[in-house]
Image (cartoon, rainbow, N blue to C red; front, top):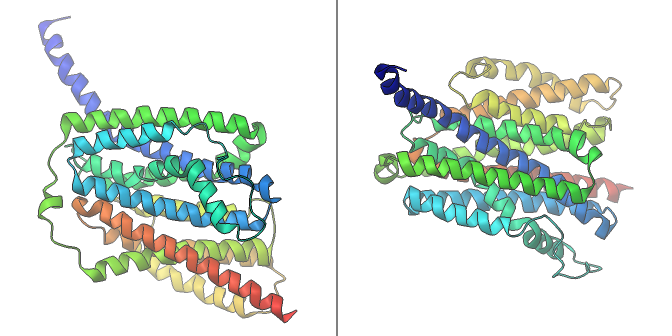
Length: 380
């Protein structure tokens, strides 16, 4: 090897390491999302035998997971805004270590047997004591690592929002991977051990990302010097996030309950919902925002006619129209969210408000559906 080659090698190594930084952050975010989406059905299935498969379990589980996600985003916002990045990375690693101490995933026995009535608070307590810390710690990953990437000094750090696509791809993989590969092949105790191994791998990945921050972290002047976000911008973020989050529950219930009960049909709206984030949170969206806006009326109009019609002989057509309308509306809202994203200094605040919007939209759709079922039951 010549002296020139020896001199060039460290530079080449540094350049290769720099190129790997976005992939490291994207992989860490994707793994965390996969773990989040696989623990939800896994742990809920652990709880079901205690209550004989009661539908209440699924409803309470949905409320808990939405609340834990919102709490994780609030934690990420506080740790980014209140402490230096290096200290924040150490704090978060300590949080992950405490979460790892609760593994493997199992039902907490401190609450005793389930009560005969008013079971909601008992269920929420069971979820909190059993998986609350691991789930909330994982839920912080998407906003936290995007903020870290914005401070990494990388040439592509000016737009960390594109990493959100990795989170939704990981969620998409977990959504289909658990019912098709994990659940049929492994018993619950083996699933819990495998999930714990995945959590350990995730800690290694986020530790590597923390080292990048420790070595390359640059100040984020947008955090210290940025003006306050106007209230109407926050309200707009909440509304834009709430609409598709509510629609995904409404469309899932309508398609899988009112139209048809085909296997895995309920998965499609959620899968499309996740993919709309992948399609829009990028510099070049899969479909331009203006094109989506022009297409929306062409699917909403026939959908309205179909909903008003009493007979549903062509249920497959109605499923397709419902899904098409939902996808376009989700693309429209999420595309508008991406267009209205703030500077990276306000990234965690942006995700905190959108998470609140998603929780409100989901709760509104679920409560509306419950009231509708109660109204129909009283008529008979």
